[in-house]
Image (cartoon, rainbow, N blue to C red):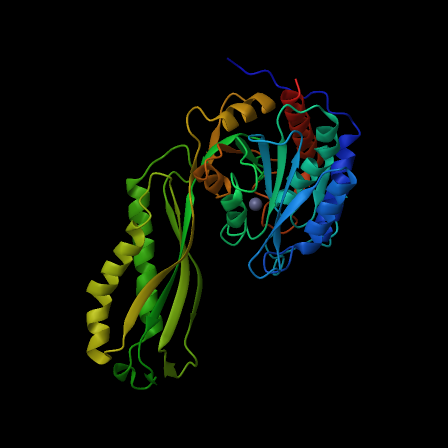
Length: 396
Ligand SMILES: [Zn+2]
C-alpha cells in the first residue's frame, strides 16, 4: 500500500530560516583537516536560544567535536537526525563565487558543503523550534559529527556512547544528499597503502638497483586487472556500477631522474558491494607480489619488500527488510521504492550499533565534492516538509 505523504503543513516562513542558517553554516570553513569547533559553538548557542541543551563529544586531540542534542521527552528511543559538519577541500576546483559565502543563482544556493551536507543540518536546525513547540511522544535527537569525509572516523566515539550516557535512537535518518530519495543500502570502503622498497643505483647502471616505481607500476596494473576481473564476475543491479570497484588515488616515489628509485608508495581503495569479501583484493595483490615481483627483486637486493597496510574501513549499509527507519522515511516522503547507492555514509556504523538507519536528505550527490557545489531551494523545501511531517508523526 502506498503510504500517505505527510507534513504538508510546512509554513512558508520556515524555508527562508533554513537558508539563513545555511548561510551561517557554510561561512565556517570546516574542511576536514581544520577544526569544526566554531560551527559546533554556533549550533550549541542556537539550540540553547531555543531552550535545547546539547552534549559535545570531543575528538581525542580536542580540535573537533561531535554534538548530540535531544528535544522532547527524556528516555529511550526517539529518532536521530544525523549530519556531518566537515567538508572536502576547495583547492584546485573551479568556483564562480566564494565557496564560503552562500550565493543564490537561479533557485540554487552555491557554497562548499551546501549540498554535502550543511543543507540538511540547516533544515534540522530551522525545524528545531517546531520540534520544541510540539508535544513529542518520543524525542528527536540532533547528531552532528566531524571527519566523515576522511573515513567516517569522527562519529565513532559518539556512537560508542549510544545506549550508555547518550540515548540510543530507535531509528536514525542520515541526511546525506539523496535528492530526498530513500536509500536502504550502500557500498563499503576499504582503504590501503602499498609501500615498495627497492634499491638505489645510478640510472646509467639500472641493473644494479631495484626500481621501486617500476614495481609499483606493475602492482597498479595488477589492480586494474583484478578490477576488470571483479567487474566481469559481480553483478548487483541495485548498484551503479553493479560491482565492487578499485581505484588508485595517490602515488609518490623517487628522488631524482638520474637515480633508480628505492621508495614508492601508493594509496588505493576498494568500494565493495555489501556482499563482497573485502579481504580478497589485498590477498590477490599480495599473491601477485610474492609470485611475480619479489623473487626477481630479491635477487638484486635482499631488502626488497612490498607491504600493504589497511588505512581504514567504512562498513557497507544494508537496512533490514523490516527496518522501521526505512518505513518511516517512505511514509514521510510518500515514496514507494527504496534505492541503493555506491557512495558511503555513516548509516552502516549506526546500523551496526543497533540503530535501524536510512539515508535521505536534500541535494544531489552529483554536486557533492564538486566545484560550484549547490543545493536547490526546492530541495531544502522538500526537506523542511519531511521534517515537519516527522514532527507531526511523533506528536499525533
Ligand atoms: Zn557527506
